[in-house]
Each structure stands twice: as C-alpha cells, then as structure tokens.
Image: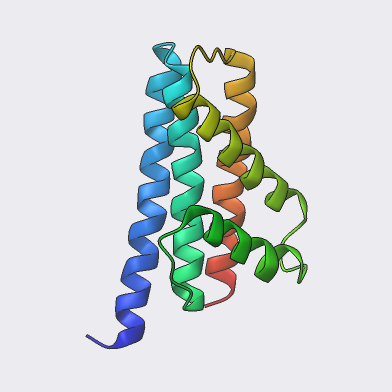
Length: 133
C-alpha cells in the first residue's frame, strides 16, 4: 500500500470513529448520562482533529497540543471560521470538568448545545477534508 493510501485509510477510520461517537452520545443522552455524553462529544470532535492532522502530516499524542495546532493552522490562517476554535476549546474544558471534578452536574440543555456543536464541527471538518484532498 502506498503512503497516501494509508493516510486516506486513517482519515476514513477517524471520521468513522467520530460518527460512531454521535450515535453513542444519542444513547447516553436518552439515558440521562450527561457527563458521559460530554466525554463522547469531546472525543467525537477529537477524532476529527486526528483525521485532519493525519491528512496534514501532523502527529502528537497530546490533546492540548493538537488543539493548539488546529487553532494555529486552521483558525488563525482563516481556513475555518473562528467559532470552531472556540467550540473545540469549550468542549475540551467541559470534558475535563465532567471527567475529573467532583459533584459535577450538567443539564440536558447544556449537553444538547454541546452535541449540536459537535455534529456541526464534525460536518465542517469532514467537508474540509473532502474538498481539500
């Protein structure tokens, strides 16, 4: 297999992981598992960052480094609207709070807002990847 075919396969795999996360979030919300839903919302978006990073040849195992690279490469350079940098940063912070802080309560309305941001983020990144092969 040629190198670019490996990259295309990896990009496809990451997109599928993100879309699977959407389905998981629906189940979690339906069952009132809002903190767990925030975790999966973040990871769905994270998988899309991994997809675009793979396409661009950027590698890291650090979440904040990946988000920083995304903001520098796509938001600062205006390849994507500024709000997508804000969305990923907000969801990253929300995920950290839900995963690591004690006695966190998050409302269904808050989770639904994050979920809608997630679905939009996934679509925008997928469109970018499809239009910039």
